Length: 163
View 1 (cartoon, one colour):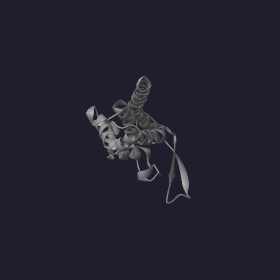
View 2 (view 1 turned 180 degrees about the horizontal axis):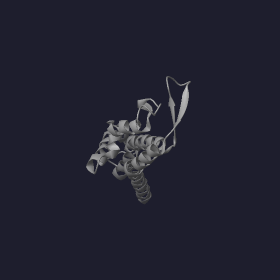
View 3 (view 1 turned 90 degrees about the vertical axis):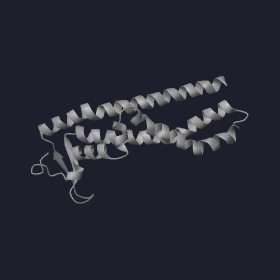
View 4 (view 1 turned 60 degrees about the horizontal axis):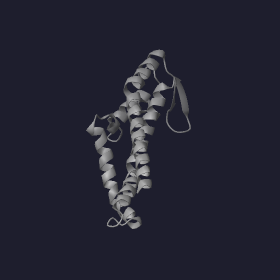
């Protein structure tokens, strides 16, 4: 978008919002490959055991009910990683929506003076390419991660009933 034809302030342009998201320390996490993507989930889960472990030990003493303690602690420790993944997902969905919209809502100087700018066809095409090749793979990966977590929870629940 050239600044001469686009009245949207630079920081509110969908393409710049995408770049900012891609470069931010938190949202960049979803763009990392392999272990770089999994590692923060594992670290958050392990750190959350500091809280989940003592809570689980009140219900199930590890010396007497180790499997139940581990299952309950694992489920409790998953809370923060799940919330972080939800935040990642919502941030990427927001930018995807802004890029796919043919109109851009923006504010010139404050909340009370909102305007709408209609994107020209070349900007729409560029934005759709970014969504298709950059953002959709990230969202699919996050969806697969949620499915894996849901599957793990179902397995833990099944295991719980077997104990």
